[in-house]
Image (tube, rainbow, N blue to C red):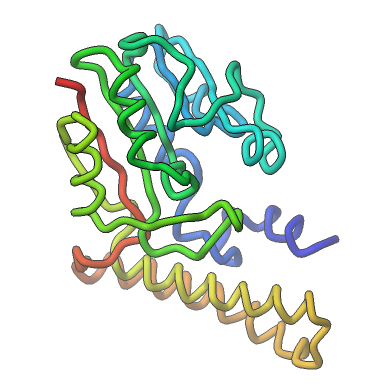
Length: 237
């Protein structure tokens, strides 16, 4: 059993370095609460968001060949570049971009395209990491503060409704520590380093950090300046 398959078996437990992020239900419920009508899922990957949509919604998945097909085995209706959508103006009630903008070479153009294809009074829902390791390299290009995110969304002609942190500061600190420990473990295994004897220590440290951060987050206030990422909802005026 390799490290990836082992991690997938403990994904929902504090033994996993990303346990504090929670499962897909958090993002799924957020999309279900806001998405209406005809929904375009940009960067759809496995189309997992489709099963969270409310009754009455129709779904169109879109992904980019290099990353979607080759990395995620995506099954979209449309393969295309998010910054040049082959779709008509104002044809969707909701456009969803979950953890997509960081992987785009031209994120501002992609936001403009989302604004173009959504109908007036329609919604654009997006999430973006802030404090999170590089992933899907080399297709990981940027992080934005909340102020930079709002700037770019408004520059695309959209009106920001609400921005919420994806994770509190204490849980974010725990997440980063666990990811660093997990990354160290993966490097030791990959290099077959003699320090592999420390793996049991790392395996014990991860659930300890996870549990401590989870408890601390429920006892202490969060610091607004630190989060793992953001969720933003906007409308087209």
